[in-house]
Length: 162
Image (cartoon, rainbow, N blue to C red; front, side, top):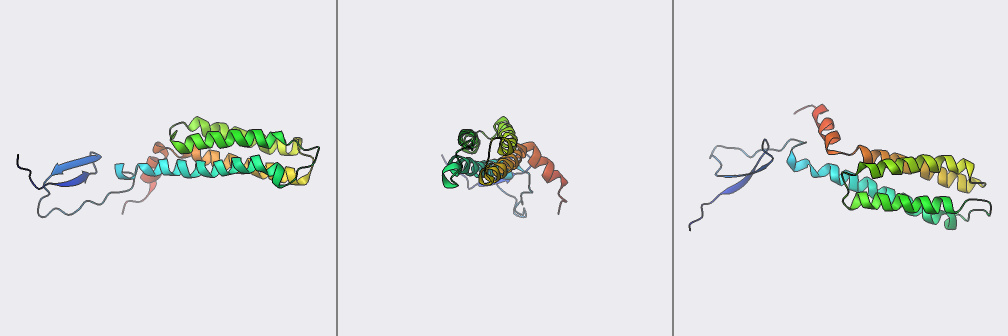
């Protein structure tokens, strides 16, 4: 069986490879942002932001020991909720890209951490650490939850076409 020399070109309208011979005068097609070649970018954004939230969760777990919280500070609050934040963010970064509910839960935990910083902590070190960590967890959770395929398409549709 004889094989013909074919080149694989990507058809931007169909979002798949088109096995055909290009016409001699056909110029290579440049892929505009938002086409199927760029669809992996929202997944990369989710993975990157969720990885930062994993780091925030690890900080929450180790912060009572690194900062030497006082005896009246609630040490278990940042440890438990840091572990939950880390596990949920790791699941999202590892491939649960469409499970935005995990990021919404992390946002709720961020709100709780911010409130509990002033309620359960008795030293300024614990208040600042847990309060700022709560803000960071909330912001990263919101960013991760908003990084969806539809959001990327909306952002791309607003860009001026060159």
